[in-house]
Amino acid sequence: MIEPSDNETLPNILSVGATVPEKVLTNEDLEKSLDTSDEWITSRTGIKRRHVLEKDETPSSLGVEASREALEDSPVGVEEIDLVIVATNISDMPIPGSSPLIVEELGLPSDIPFFDLKAGCSGFLYAIDVAANMIRGGGYDKILVIGLEALSRIVNWEDRSTCVLFGDGAGASVIGDRGDRGRILSTSVHGDSSKSKLIRLEGGGTRLPPAEGSEQDERYYLEMEGKGVFKSAVNMMKSSSLSVLEDADLTLSNVDWIVPHQANIRIIKQLAKSLGVGMDRIVVNLEEYANTSTATIPLAFKEGIDEGFIESGDLVLLTAFGAGAAYGATLLEW
Ligand code: ACO
Image (cartoon, rainbow, N blue to C red):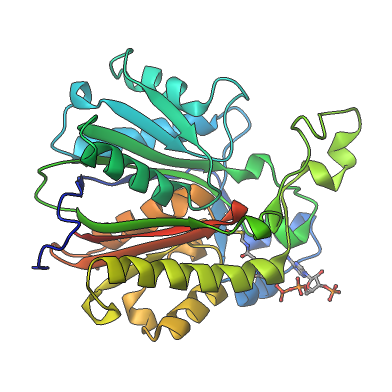
């Protein structure tokens, strides 16, 4: 049992739900349409497969499914949810965002507030930080946070340097007070806007509106500076991890499991090395799902629980980095 610290008033992560689409795209599938190989993708990224939405499926449907799981797994009734936060970088349509669609589909009370939150791949941890502090502030009691992503809809499937990296998925958690498990000990969110262009999609907004022929223009697809992303991801996830530990007066030796953003196995190994933590304390599942952006943390966290690695009472450190550059971490006792 961790001793209470100054942050003892933070609420709990009461449950975790996660889902991916049924359709699977393997590296071998991609070899058929791209100048790439299973060997290149596996050795550079650790990814073997990714799950992607079918054309007629919507990103919000993933959020609904993950939320249903999180609600079923929590001691909280649907009627008790008083706010919904959806962390995502994509939505079924530009306006409205995904959150009202999900509230309606879930059958939550129609008069509760909701909003979408865009913080790159760190969105789920940003949403936890916001929810925990809103509950601590006293205005809310039980908040449903969702990380949902369908980057398959915005990557260029002819660009081998990006499309092989991503998959679709969603995760959700109910955040609330007085739970028996998931006590949040500390959260932190950070940014470095000087690196805001490392990962970008320039086209489709007001600066570069949709135009005829834009499907041939790389600026209308997700782009990134791979080496810059790599370096920043390691440094920023390390720094936010140390920051939450310091806030909770704990050290890495107290941590049982680290659940990092699942972007790339080499980034994760480098993070482990720089923290001085063995890979046997790190949850990794990107071989199956690739980088699902805001959904990687709940997907990996839930898998760690379901597979029996993460047990009751374990100290778990979640850490992520993404477009913006937004990064953050959450420390909790499961
Ligand atoms: N298959 C075969 N060859 C490829 C592929 C591919 N899928 N992609 C790129 N290449 C080629 C390049 O064209 C290049 O060829 P060239 O030398 O003839 O020009 C060669 O491989 C080397 O390219 P690099 O970009 O230098 O490859 P690198 O070893 O740096 O690996 C990678 C690229 C995996 C993207 C790496 O930079 C990386 O891991 N970056 C981190 C980025 C990341 O994971 N982003 C995730 C999204 S962002 C986020 O989640 C926060």
